[in-house]
Length: 396
Image (cartoon, rainbow, N blue to C red; front, top):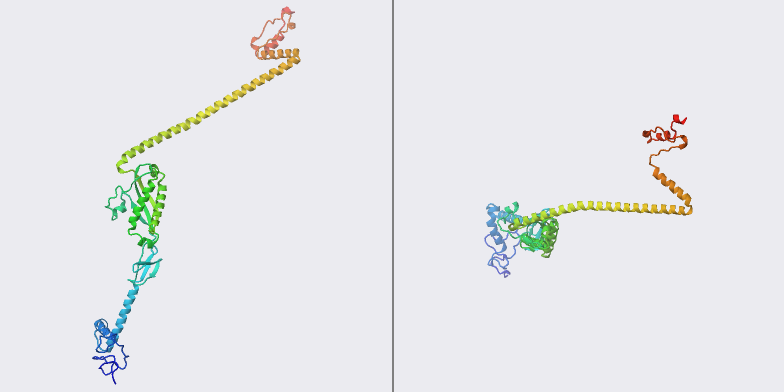
């Protein structure tokens, strides 16, 4: 009977070498991918055996025999399992509370994960970036370095003149300001911008120049600072949103608004002159506010006195006219009586305050008193004495 496998090894279809025959307790081995027996290429078991021989010192201590082959296979399985676990562990990562995880698959964005213990496909299939999304980042822009900027890597960079800006009334100011920002969208922040800090710096300077160009210099020095900060922040946020930067501007703070160093002396002189002008104007205004109310009060008093005098004179004239008319009407109705009454009233008015001495001719034959107490006439005692003079010898 012909051998169906075309081999000369006693009908063994798997081929046989030294010690390569199959023991009864072993399962039949699969043919090699080349379909060969002993004359074909090396089969899978030969490759594993060679690998086992190389790794035997690490797992079996160099012992031979069938038990050594079994322990070698177990060692390979264990090593493969350990390697698999280590490889899978590369997909474990932790996202801190102030972070977000950005998962990349072969460098392309896949998803964003929230804080906690997470897993992605092992490296190099997937990787993760962990940007800080709640941290406030600070960017100081100005020509006068602070303690932080002196320690930074850009401390030696010459920024003089970059923040000298033209105001709305055609004056120059040197502005130092600080931008506080954070990451709003990690995907856009990581993949839409090449240099985020440089972008924020250029956008902030552009926005500040535009807003300062619409503001008078005096407002920039005094009450307009808060309005400038709000407008610059709004304009920066709008520009960064147009760029799809994923950056959120938290605040813009003006640190210093001064004239350029080249003209600071002249500017200070102008400011002093303006302050003197304002002081003198305030003093003049104070004097005006003091003198005008008093002058207005005196004028009002004069007008009130004149009005009162006018009313008094008019009322007195009206009273005199009415009295004259009443007397005239009475005189027309009874002339004699009215004439007598007018005479008596006139004499009453004439003699009311005069000192009077009344002598009664019938009281004495002579009509002249021999003694008249002139000192007592003022209190009325003299009148009584004159009315009843003492009798003399001539009167007997």
